[in-house]
Image (cartoon, rainbow, N blue to C red):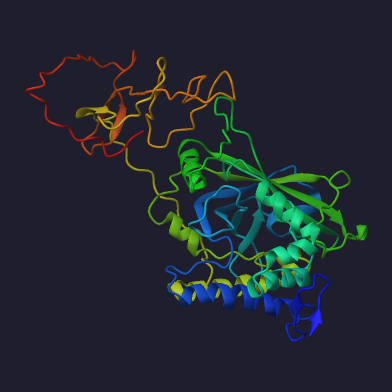
Length: 456
């Protein structure tokens, strides 16, 4: 038996020093993922980043002004590549979004040659998270950390003896993001970049055009990330700048210190490409399922961009094994798709108005106790958070004494086509509609008209 500096006993046969990859594969896949599947998990899930927020299609456009050294290297040698992204959190599907570590898996098609996994098919993957560093330096430390939690059930004991890891994890948990589309992501590990450079990657969200402010407001809804993603992409296109930090290999920075950032004052991140996510319905049938089926591995990249370091070596085996286990259990193909899933075609437009409907329908409203004032209830399916316009600290639902405003309803008239889909609003000065309102006798109530199947 050997005793670590943290006083947690690890048997000598459980070799984290020389077989960290094998032991981490055992703990993440055999003791974690496969055990959950054996207990009936359906569908089978990933070993990590299990909670899906949504999947979106897009494209990766290379910038013409990208560094010359990149124009002949791997992914960056292309002009435009079709892409799919999977947004997720490193938590269980039923856990709340708030405070979770966000992840993005980016898959592109159209890359030449055999990748660092030995595969052909022209696919490349990027995996990033919303924090710039990892919480341990290398595979040995990752093995010891995981052993403390998975085998000994004593993460607190490990963290008490490893203040650096404890501090990073606390900072990661304290970071609160309101949207997967407005946060920055980092690849955290170094990659080769041809013969002369090492690199680190980052995705930086671009600001929306004027008139479309990006509201970054988290909530206590356990699944607010998915709701936010669907609402945003239904209204606007979103973009991320793909940034690359190029560091000469001669600089000699260690490749096995994942808790450390490379100095960006000496080697600044440079814009290389733009990830474009067009307007779309992320709730379209099959889109989320497709995102779940996709497998991501940082080694699925051109050999000239191969990952570096011992944690990268662990990810190669564990991610590949985990994907095979999951796909086998779910009956999915084990091979990567040779072409991306086509975007759902836009619905045919029928602008012929055949009936008018009133929305909202009569329902339950909040009865407040504030003597003055009111708040208008939601008027769309996925309303944006109600903000106090003049005073950011003011609660828009309560008065100065904390009394709740009553909820009012603003009724609108919409014209629908034969399928019950809203064509346009008929109320308003420029609608061109002639509307007459009249009251009806309570003794002769009008028949209830069907509401539109689709709301704007």
